[in-house]
Image 1 (cartoon, rainbow, N blue to C red):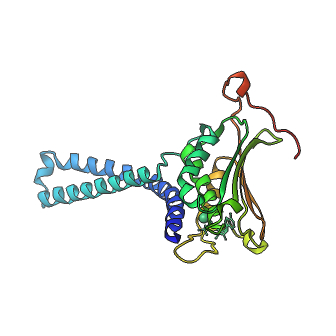
Image 2: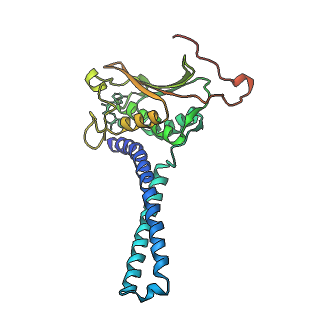
Image 3: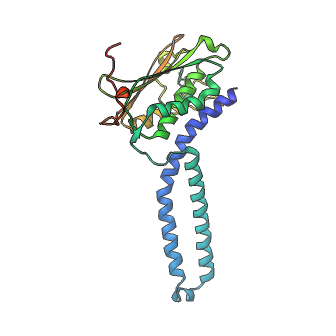
Length: 258
Ligand code: ADP
Ligand code: MG
């Protein structure tokens, strides 16, 4: 079971990391490939055929191009794996992202807690559906890992959405797990900070979540109490004009102070 959790956590973290790395490699790779093509074209001329070692030069270029093509294939695979294409900011339905993440985390959640969906009527947010899905998956896997297995009726993971007082979309993922001491809570967004055994935790999940949410112009914060549980709140900018919806589904403002 710990292996399964480790895999889910790593997949979530690696997916985001790999997408970022692939994106960074792509630009210089295009530059390399274009320059190799330029050199190849110049070596193909009549004049170039007179150069000493002409055949060796052509062979060296062909090898370099083959290498560049292999890198391109690897980058393409990484992108497919991470399913992160570009940092997009398009209208996204947070409930779709949440449902995706809940499905992915279901094998971890089911033996530990009831899942409670408390979805409010919220407008789309400006973001990237894949990246948001990865953020929610990281948070749900962490919630599962904070709850012991075997008594799912005694624990709950609650996913709540609403529009906050400033009109932004708020997503809260709350668990009734172990909770955290203040000195742990203070460090959770640090890369490689983990309290989990080697092989279970990488300590990358929350730092990546933080990076994604900040890049999208949002905020992420945590509340936690030992023995009570933990709640993560993600706040995201709503699209300026909510998408046209049927009257009965129109977004409503938050119900005021709770
Ligand atoms: P990892 O899960 O690999 O340890 P994260 O960045 O996802 O890395 O989390 C860092 C640390 O924050 C965890 O090791 C754990 O101590 C703490 N943490 C995160 N989420 C929760 C939670 N829901 N309940 C209790 N502790 C948590
Ligand atoms: Mg984690």
